[in-house]
Length: 274
Image (cartoon, rainbow, N blue to C red; front, top):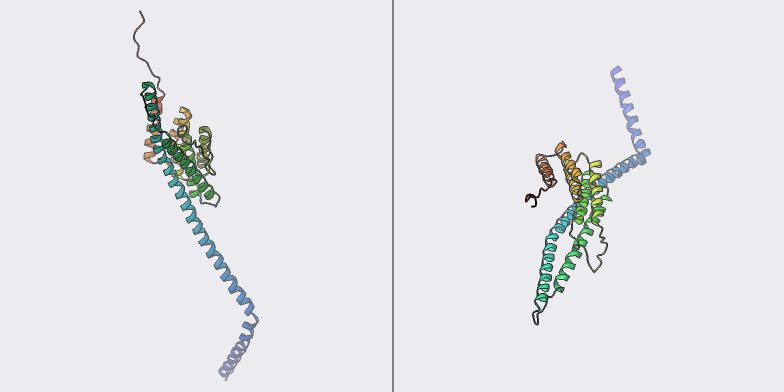
């Protein structure tokens, strides 16, 4: 009898619960839909941000790759410029030879094609330099990762060091190049030094960038004739725990070369004058 009573009570409770369920879901339907909508929105936002971050990383990497490629082309253009300058000097020598020989009806070599080629070479160099600077500016303004920022700074510093070491006249042109600016060798060296030092300060854990910065700073000191400073930079390479064996070997060789450069030149004696 008790078992039957308990069974009836359980059935009544279940019926009451089932009777309330539709009303419960009806009353809270809006809240449930709101929670589902919010969950979907959070997923969409997170997914969008992840995709945007991946796309930004890809674009920055492409920009850095483009800048490095243009820097390589800029460096290779130097050999063409040297060849053009060598041809110009040979033609000038030929002009002087003809003038001194007083050759009748002698036709001096036509310098215009060579001059135009030199102008085009210089304009191309300035255009590439401006393109590299624009690519680096774009990367640095787009929230790059620390590794990307380090590559950007190294690339810009390398560019400025290269421009500082161009022979006189290798950026002169009679036609303006849009957006391009030319600075003195000393100014380019200072810009390169600032970026190399920035790498040592802000990217001290990036071994590759640090090594490039140390060698770059040593090269700048050599440009300035500051041999003690250059030797100190190479010594830092040798002592840096991030340096590879080949870095240390190059640094040792460079320091030895500086020591040879600084040795006094002893002129041979011819004996006392009689």
